[in-house]
Image 1 (cartoon, rainbow, N blue to C red):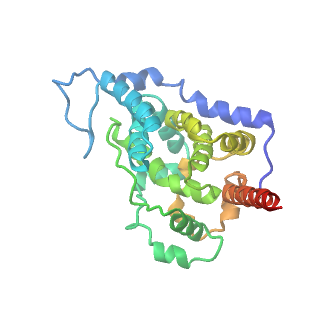
Image 2 (cartoon, rainbow, N blue to C red):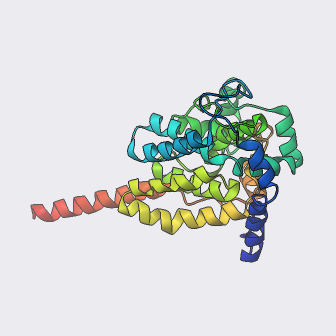
Image 3 (cartoon, rainbow, N blue to C red):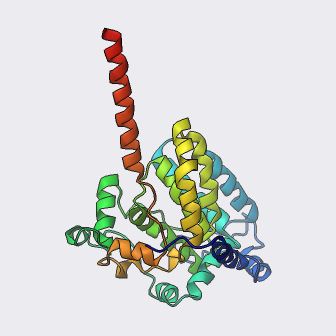
Length: 295
C-alpha cells in the first residue's frame, strides 16, 4: 500500500483540484444560468431533463437538504440527496469534475464511451464467481451483504449541460464501487465517512452537506467518526487519484488491494468489526452486572 503523502504534497493536490473552480467560472456561469421563467420554460436538453430557474434550483437545494435531515425513511433520503446533489453541482462544481475527466486519458474514454452501471451491464453471477479479493467479487459481495442493487440510482434530470449530466450519473453509479473498495457499510456512520472522502476527492458540495447527518449519530458513534474515520477520509480524500477517472468495468478482475494502492487509498478502520467488538463488550458488561446482582 502506498505510504501517506507529506502534507505539502496533499496541499498541492487539494489546491490543484480547487483551482479549476476559479478558471472559466464566469463563462460557465453565463452558459449555465438561463434567462427564463416558469411561464417560458425552454425545451429539455436531453431525455428526462427538467430545466429550472435560479429560484427553483435554490428552492430545490434548500428543500431537499432540509427534507433529508427530517425524513428518516431511507428511500426518501436517497431521492432527496440525489436532488440536492444536482441542485448544488451547478454552475461550477460539476464542470470541475467534467474537466478532470477531460484532462485524463481514461476519463476522456469514459466520456466518449458513456458506460452505465446496472445489473444489465454487469453480470453479478459472473462477478460472484471471480477470485476472492478481486474487485468484481468484492463489489458483488458488498452488494449482497448490504442488500443493495446497482439498479436503484436515480436518473439525473436537473443539470442543464448534457455532458455534465452524464458525469453526475457516472459519479452516482460508481458510488457503490467506492463503498466496496473501502469496505464501508451503508449505515449512517459508514455513509458519512465515505461522503467526507468523496468531498475531498470530487469537491461536489452535496457530499459535504450530507455531513450534517452527523446529528443523527449517537454520541459514541459521533466520537468514533471524528476520531477514526474522518482523519482517514482527509488523508485518503486529498491523497487519492480522481476516482471519477476509474473505468471500473475494466478493473473487475484485478486484485482490490493492488487497485487501492494504485489509487493511493488507505483501507479505513473496519467499521463492522469495530461495532461488533463494541457490542460484545457491552454484552460482557451486562452479564457481569447481572452476575453481581444475583450474588
